[in-house]
Image (cartoon, rainbow, N blue to C red):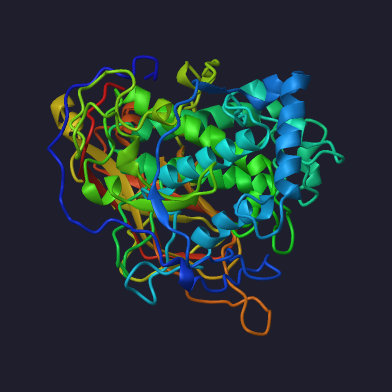
Length: 550
């Protein structure tokens, strides 16, 4: 099936949940060292105890249009403004909240455990691996962009977006490659940022022998599947809920964040601590970070449009998650997700479907994106045609596959983990699919070192309890960037990390590969890099939040 008809909705599910534990701003006086491997010192900001926190007033400016990076490279007037704005930001006093590196440190503070949540001394504020990943980064880009505009006195200024979801935009943006430019960063993988290398969204620090055209096709398929398989349940795209004070939760990012992580890996240094883009603590020191995140933000905007602009989580713990930033007037301001709601609605948001400009629309922040082609929405040959669908595989090529069991298993790059998993129900009717999405759940994922880790997940139909030599269809990935700490002696700490989980929708996939009558599936986990153990693999039916036509 194609994605071309997305947007027609069957209905909206139940109303808001009230749990009253939204993530709130930390106590800024209690920032502590974020001892990440790539840091030479802490990333805490200068603290002024007399500074007051104000409610943010949204800008009354012309609607600003973010443009693709590969299309602005010949717009010299725009590039001169962009470079001058960043140059002025870099020339500000080191302690100024607008200073380029103070702005970069914001990402480090909220991604590398520099703050604890309010009223706790051991639960860090973390803006990745959950449903606040997208709204927090949207605000982060918004204020960064507004500050740049203020520095050059231009209310219409926007940062570009790295249009990596189209063939023409999949190379590293040329506007960041000039070594004499303030947009340049030397700490990149030079193999990838020069000579037109194609961004590989399945990159895992190994060379891809595929041709450029094949990498482009795989990228488009990855993006298409991310949208298609998660359209009926926002947490598959955006990440799981996170609530204030929770200690024992398993971190669970959505597949958009996985794609985001892959691009970070591809740009960052390939060795050592993988500065700058390759490590959360230093990623925002590279100007391409904001360009990359601008496209991530655009992907969220497209996702919302395809779902009829319905609020993804009618849950006060998401809508009331609150963040602090310095705005374009040097004021410390408080913002939350619900502030992006259209003022014609009350909170929690009661949205009418298919109304342009509804909830969480960037136009509330007075920006939009230039409309460009979306090739991944069209027909792409993403399914395999041979062994995956064939029942004619000879018995000699089949392998017996068992269940996962109750003991955690380490992934082995030379021997992928293959398990047979029972489905909760086969041959579900259309109405049942509208009500519940079928999901692969991988729990207790533990990255056992502080290095980057990645594994890919494939699905195939077994022959009894036998699996063929082909892994089947790619359904999604787990990607974790380097995200550790340094010990007191300056060396990298090893060991305990919070466990994670991965959820991947497969309802549409099973239709595509004619597997709806299968009682069981073979799920294969292929380790690409890092050291990982997993605690279980299952298939569940989860309640949809937007039963979309796919």
